[in-house]
Every structure is written in C-alpha cells, then in structure tokens.
Length: 138
Image (cartoon, rainbow, N blue to C red; front, side, top):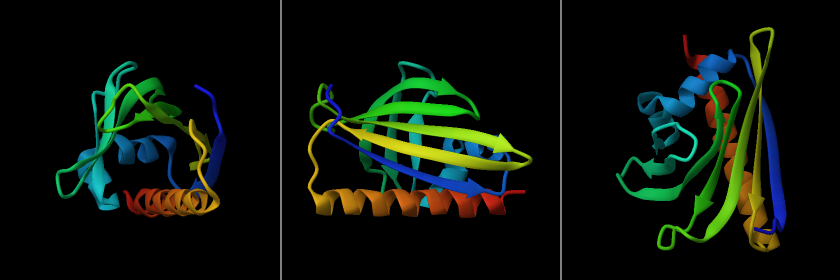
C-alpha cells in the first residue's frame, strides 16, 4: 500500500513501560478511555476497538508486537476487511521510570486538511488519556 500521509505524536508518561502497556492490554483499565481493545495480542491476530456501547469501531491485524516496547497494527474498513486504511505504530521507550510513547499513523489514502486536523486532535486526546491513566496507576 502506498502511504499518503503520516500523523505522528509523542507524550511523556510518568510511569514504567509495563504500566503503560497494561493500559492497552487490560480491558478494565482501557475502558477508562471510552472502550477497549479486542485482541489475542499475537502477531497475525485480530485487533479492534470496541466502544462502551459494545459496538466495534475499528478492526485490523497485529503486524508486530513486543510487550512493553512496540505495538504495530493495521486498520481496515469495517465493511471490507480487504481494504487497509492505515498502519498504526506505538513505541514505548522507558528511561528512569518514565515512558515516552511515540505514536504514528500511516494513512493509505489522501485525507484533506480538516480530516488531518481531526485525526491529530484525536491522537492528542488518546495519548493524554493514556498519560492520565498511566500516572494514576499504582
């Protein structure tokens, strides 16, 4: 697939990479962000976002996973799993008890400026939610 645009964001979380990773894989914690990931957490396995309303909002496949270090998955059309929309990568770099989360989304379609702004805002909201949850975990 041809990459048309890339959205990249970073945030520093005052928590270990293991605690940050826990936010992604523990549905009870992830629900604090408004939903949960549905996955078997294995390369080649499915991954999707299910809202609190029980509706699936995204679907994809895990492309690479290194617990506490890396999560890379694609996002596909809900009504056509053959159409890849984007590839999302989360990198977790821990240093002295804090974790830098680097997130990127490689778009396989051309988004207009308004769409890109909305997506960037969504990323900022999601990463801030991860930070707030991570820094509140004991």
